[in-house]
Amino acid sequence: MREFTSPPLTLAPPVGGLADVVFEHADEDPRHIALGRKDEAGQWRDVTAAAFRDEVLALAKGLLAQGIRFGDRVAIMSRTRYEWTLFDFALWTIGAQVVPIYPTSSAEQCMWMLYDAEVTAAVVEHEDHAMTIATVIDRLPHLRGLWQLDSGAVQELYDAGAHLDDEVVHRHRKAVTPESVATVIYTSGTTGRPKGCVLTHGNFMYEADTVIARWEPVFHSKRGDEAATLLFLPLAHVFGRMVEVAAIRGRVRFGHQPQLNAAALLPDLAAFRPTFILAVPYIFEKVFNAARRKAEKDGKAGPFEKAVDVAVKYAEAVEAKAWGDGPGPSAGLRMQHQFFDKLVYSKVRAAMGGRIRNAMSGGSAMDRRLGLFFAGAGVQIYEGYGLTESTAAATANPPERTRYGTVGQPIPGMTVHIADDGEIWLNGENVFEGYLNNPKATDETLHDGWLATGDLGALDEDGYLTITGRKK
Image 1 (cartoon, rainbow, N blue to C red):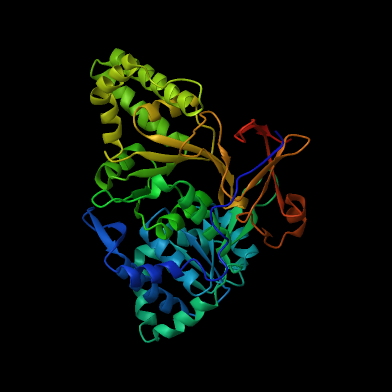
Image 2 (image 1 turned 30 degrees about the vertical axis):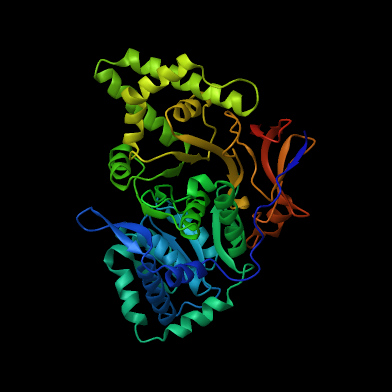
C-alpha cells in the first residue's frame, strides 16, 4: 500500500486560541482539579481550574505591563516545571509566541535561536541559564527583558500587572485565531543551523482534540478514578507541549517532573499516581530493567523471566484475537497470567503509581517484545510516530487493534503517503506552515501541503506504518 487516510473525528477549530479553554473550564467547573503542583515541602497540591485561570490572567497582565505585545516572541529556557505551563498559557492569552529552548543548550545555540526569532524577552529557570544568555547578549539587539524563575519572576510579574484591568487581557485573547502563531520550535538538523518550525494555535488544537477523541479510553475520567498524567518529557520538545495542551483541553489532571532519571521519577510516579503517561521507549526500558534487577536481587530471576514470557504470550494471543487470527488466551495461559499478575505485574504497575493503564510512546522505535510485556502486565502502550513539523503525533496505534512493532495508522484526519523512493509524506491539519525566515528549507520540506519527512517507511495492507530508515 502506498497511501492511507484515516477519516477525521474532529473539525479544525474555526475560531479562538489555545488559552480559551483555561477560561472556559474555570467558568464551567471552577473547582475541577486541573493540575497538581509540588509545594516547598515536596508534597503534591491540587490546583483548581479557577486558580489556574487566575494565575494565567495575573501573569498575562504582568507581561503586558512589562511591554510584551501581541505577536512578540518570548523564549522559555527551563526544565519541565509548573511555571513553564503557566507562562505558555499566559503568553498565548495575549497572542505572544513562545520560543522553547532546551535547558542544556549552549550559548551559541541560544544566541542563534534568540537572534533568528527576534526574541524580545526570555524566561530562564536559574542563574546558570541567565549567565548563558548574558555571554551573547551583545549579539541580541531585540532582547530587552529577562526573567528568572528561581528569583521570583512570577510574583514580580504579578505585581507589575496588578493595576491593569482584566478586560485588557481579554481583548488580546479574543484577537487570537487558529491561524495565529503559538510557538516557534527549533529543530536540530543533521547539517546547518537549527530551523524554526512555526506552529499555530490551530495546529495544536486540532492535534490535541484529535488525540483526545481517538484515544478516548486514555483520557476518560470516572468518578473516583479521574484521569491523570505526570509530564516529564522536555517542554522544549513538541511531544511534551502536545501533552500539556491535550491535558488542559481534555480536563486531565497533570503534574510536572523535571528529572528523567529513575531515582527522581519513580517516587513521583508513586506519589502522583497517573492513569497514563506519555514517554519515550527509554522510560519503559528503565522501568522494566528496574523490575528485573529487583527480582534478581531477591533471588527471583527465574520466576520473573517466566512472568515475562507469560505476559508476552498473553498479549500476543489478545493481539491475534483482535485481528481475527486466534481465539485469544487459552484457559491455561489465563491461569498463569492471573498467578503472575499478583506476583509480578501488579508490582510493575505499582512502580508506576498503581493506577496506570495506558501509555503513549514516541521519539524512537520500541522493541516489540517490550511493548507486548507491558500490555500483558496491564499497561497498554500505544506506539506512535511524529515530528515537530506535524505537531507531534502523525500516526499511532489505535486502542482497539494494536499492531506491535509498528507505529500505527495515521491519526484521524491525516494521510500518510509513501513516495517512490520510500520517503514518508504527511498531509493534515496538524502539519506546520513553514520554517521561520527560511523559505528555501520550507520549499524543500513542503510540497503542495505535503510534508516530506526525510524518514523511510512502509504501509501494510491495513495502513499501519513501519519506519524502515532515514533518507540519505
